[in-house]
Image (cartoon, rainbow, N blue to C red; front, side, top):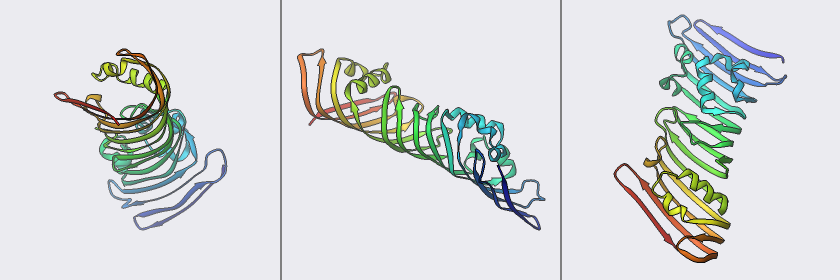
Length: 275
């Protein structure tokens, strides 16, 4: 496609007022500046917006070639498959910091808003699949609003939250509100909580039918399930299930369960109350 640009030079400043491609398979707009160009480490400002592109091929796109191969590897290690679009990507630092943008201290020079379509999240983020929504980064911290995603086989909607230090020592504050099929939700919990003390309480139930409204909050470091604080409310809507301690089968259950689970190396607490 056609590449348009407008560049001016004044003493030791290079000002890229406009650099854009408005035709062809990949459109983008960029601007920026290079200050103190005769110094050992000039100051650089990058402001970039792009069309959607394949995350697994990010290094193939022209404006993204300014980033090192290590940064593309880091990006693809965190996000795989699907499409992403830079609604906004800004870098404010030095040339050397841009060259070594994959280093944790240099990634704090980035602020961005990324639009995702069917993207798979990798560690250190929660292991979500087919994520569609908005992901923002600001000085090493992140926030997101997810329209839809999947955890194992469980579909999720309306997931939002923040993750501090998400590329180094991620600390999460997440909230979720969903209507769930109880059979699928129980299967997801059974797999996700294996090896955890609460799994014993879940495994005595089986053969669920019906749905429920779920509100869930998760806080704490993502490296290690035992350090997370989880609270939530499950509002049953005519749910039926079998339980080892109850005969016959429980049918048409309506009501709410409030659960608080705080886990740690030395303390675990679980409280359940039927309302």
